[in-house]
Length: 190
Image (tube, rainbow, N blue to C red; front, side, top):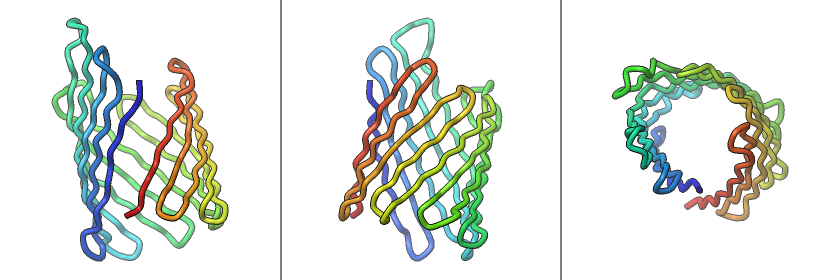
């Protein structure tokens, strides 16, 4: 099984950005689909705010497990403090499934240099999850990443390369149940 994703962004004037995404994972027996739309606008040099909506669907061919679908929506607030530190907060609610609580994420990034980025995120939804990672970029073309998340405990690794308007990325995730999950992506900057 493979994940297929199509995503894009569109600048709307000097300070606005619209984005969209569609993702599909699985086959006839089990599949997941997601579609998202959002819009953000820069309110000042250091503050960006936006809204988003995410539709998710999980389906199986087993009659004992009916398809599940839900809608997430929320607000995004991003603040950058100086050149090296940024933080964000998202808050959303889920509809169509009364057992899914209100959730949110808070995260921070710190760049001790132009080459090194560190990030951490705390997510509170069905269960609390901590994600941390680090990315090193060389010559503004080559990058290497490492990260981990809790609940369940997973490790991630990746490398990327930019050549003219193309960006190729190779990554893998080590999951305690699914094992090694390699990923490849190709980005084109138009």
